[in-house]
Length: 409
Image 1 (cartoon, rainbow, N blue to C red):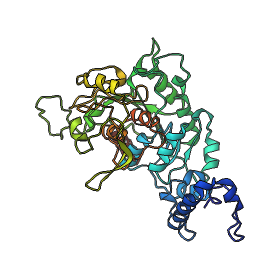
Image 2 (cartoon, rainbow, N blue to C red):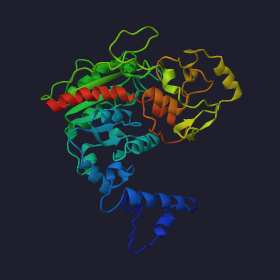
Image 3 (cartoon, rainbow, N blue to C red):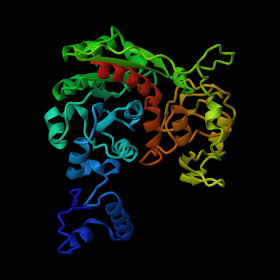
Image 4 (cartoon, rainbow, N blue to C red):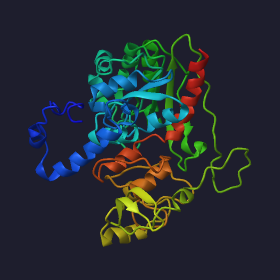
């Protein structure tokens, strides 16, 4: 198994285990050997390897070749992939993610674990070339779409809003790679704050960049509100969509839910569930309680359910915060809908009726991630992965409209 993923050069016929012994600390050998043996037998069998369900595919040339040659017509390359939320929405819509690029180690591991069979290249997008990607994925054809969520810290109201932040121009690499890869379409999502940052308008810059790369675009990006798509947040995201000249621009996504604003809603659409309803079956936790894999009395296992350990002084301060009040790092959520999720000082907002920050699982519920989606890395790194993510329901809505245009061309 380690030989196949390129970790050691080991000939199993010889039976020499010195390479394994040198590579793995003694305390880890027994557990790792057992897990690799199970993985080898179940996923990595010689006769019929299950590469499409393997989270280690990023490190296996054989597996990368197999999975990239087996994808259908609707394919996407995910740049600035983060924890995989944008890609998840595209998967729900019917796309296959053939590759992702993400610089952060913990987010890349989250992507690999929750999108088995997707090779994730751990690198800065600005250093990635189309030739390099195609050499890494030797069987990859031109993708249907290149999708991307470039860093938003330079645009966001919760960030620096510095017009000189170098990250503000990383969107240029999306069009560059899309053109070089021969992608039929491009989707970029980001925060509404990029409309104007200290006098600099980035919406026109992004649109112009995509057009220079050969894509026709919507006249202006579309702003989608999460609460109009079943997510109990007033979070908005801008989506830029570009397609090749021979493809019709997709129609704008229409809301799937009627947001609840405390009044009766006269609509044929289903009501967006209140935030409290999304959390009601999750465990009541004291500060510091819980676990990354918390088994409940009813037998359910709740992932990423470790509550932050607040001091008694902080708990007393939190207790005095009313719904919707408090500083950005300790703002108490309201029971109907959140403004947005911000991970201030690596802590998430305060629970609507418990005196603690919400857990990563509770934040993931509010964002619309499925309960089986596990966030990797230390507890301090997980909140940013969730808070920085686009709600998958929003990307799914855009992806469904795009897929209709691609299929009609």
